[in-house]
Image 1: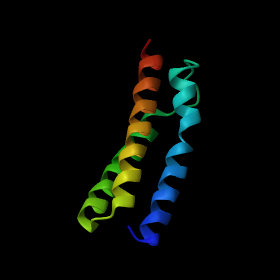
Image 2: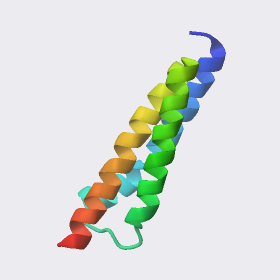
Image 3: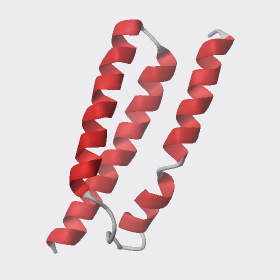
Image 4: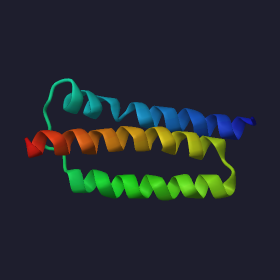
Length: 86
């Protein structure tokens, strides 16, 4: 792996880690106020497209970061939807 992909991986993991407070709020604190499920769906679509782009460009950093970001975003959207529907 070259240093450019390393920078991309670091940036991706920092970005993914930034979603952790929202995941915690929804799944541990059981609070979904202020979370817009439609917004998170749009973000998920954007991340899926970035994932496809990363696959086409064969970029490990883009692929890895977007897989983990998608997991975080989908878990936030699903958790918020579950709480708001209850």
